[in-house]
Image (cartoon, rainbow, N blue to C red; front, side):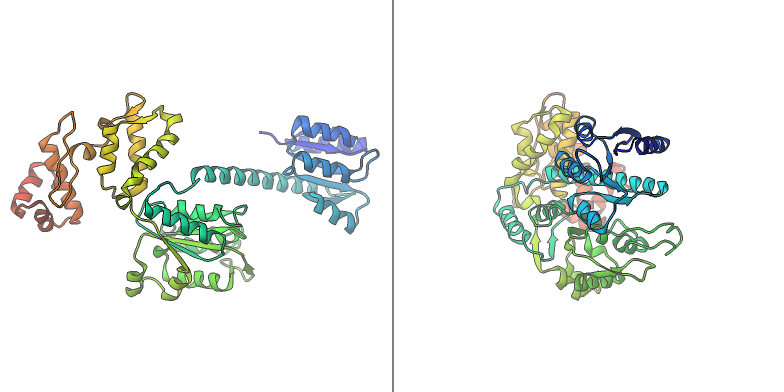
Length: 450
């Protein structure tokens, strides 16, 4: 949308000059010489930005500013006046003015101030939208099992503190959901939540992403860039997969935790931030420390409060709640509103190596291929319908009403055994209770040599 600018100035020639200049910049422009009419235009037209003269008859600019802020607290207002003093400037900024220029002013400077304020307004709108979406997406930890109730209790206790939190658990258990829940229940909830996936960023870019860089700091650094820590000031930074952070970066992170300060890459200025750190990992950091892959001093700085998220296989009583939670999110898109009893039984029996993320993906796939408004057992992937491998003498195979293919079942079991043994054919044969030569024959039979 083309930004709409409202000019409120009692001098008609000023309104004309500003209207002409702003239209040349591509903006829509409304003008008025009266404060009360300006307020009506704010109500009716919803401008993107207001340029307001401070000294006007009937209703002066300061009164208009106060009422404009009541109508729209987020509306950028730039004050113009020929009677500028430090006192009026301070008062205008305290009242909510975005900027303050004195007449005569440089037109190019005004254009720059307008552009900066429009960009800032747009960014704030996007942040507020994303924050509301984030809150809706991660409303709460779903589940009634004792394990998840303990997690919820810890989140509630730690949220109001500034303590650094380390969240552990397998991939897909909801570590980011827990981090967002801590942020949303903390006094920092109105400030940014900035996630960083330490494993997704190359080592040579990670420092720049975290701490920013100055123009010319390296090839391609054509402008100053703010880092994630700077963007998260007064809020929360979430360092996911912290165990994948290189050792040299661990040293720099330790300094930020200890001193709350850092320098941008290529810069000399020391920046101070007030940021809460939440870290997460799916690896055993104790083992990583023993191998020299993770600093012990950093571990103890991060591990002030530890929250462990249990895998889904250890909280199977939560599967129906989680499944219906995801179904509610899928309903508007795929028109499914029910999971059949047979399908729910299969979901509860499955071992879920991919945890909650896998459950969400399985349900979305089932919703896509479903022929009606109900997800049935036949809509679930083959491994749910054909085989559910267990131990301890329990049932090894579940046969669905549609039947199963023995060839496909054998192939599936061989693949699972090879996966579990990480490709070790001797170990896979032991898991299946056959000889290695018999396994090799079946691998060739099913065309699994590759």
